[in-house]
Image (cartoon, rainbow, N blue to C red; front, side, top):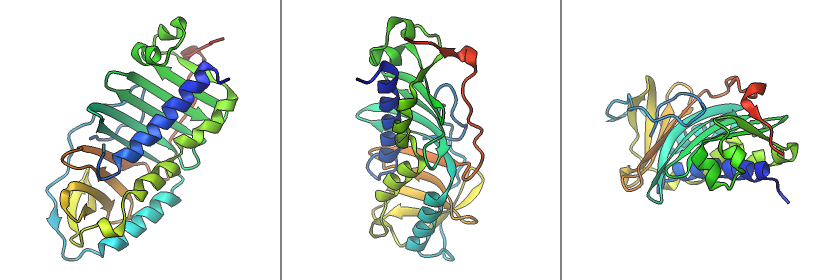
Length: 255
């Protein structure tokens, strides 16, 4: 039987990856800027993007997509932050982690369901939640009053961290974007100071867009549709993310 911490680790990890995948489909997508994961998911900041303009010198849309996908899936690490409206609720997510899922730091804020943070490391999984989150998970009373402290899931829970894998997320995200969906018109736009090619759905930008840096062919942003608005901003490709375990004083012992 799974222990309480193990169940929560599985739930939060699965939620993080499923939200991210939904956010990168053209029907449901996440709006944010860029601080790395913290004790709570950050509130998205207003975009610094300029208005996109047609680019006569742009490569073929399919070529841009191909290079962006290859670079993303080859990346050793990365980060993204954003929000998605799902089933009438706003969910914010702030993710940084490695491609293999062994190391990750994920903060999630779910409208009506509280806030949670998961730090996954080779030696274990650490979970932090507010009172609302713990109540929703049926946590023991002592945990519900943890006051921001982490609980440590058993080592066996580490096998569940594949759901926290950056590569797993990206495979699902790119599975929702195919060359046949893309408009042949490629625009140019600056996103947070990065010059990008802008790929859109054949029906236009209102159905979703993918922003790819011109200099490195790296994914910079995914956006959703008008009916399902949202945005994910990407950064820290192949960087040392500096993810560490909580201090001992921040960890609560649970029986």
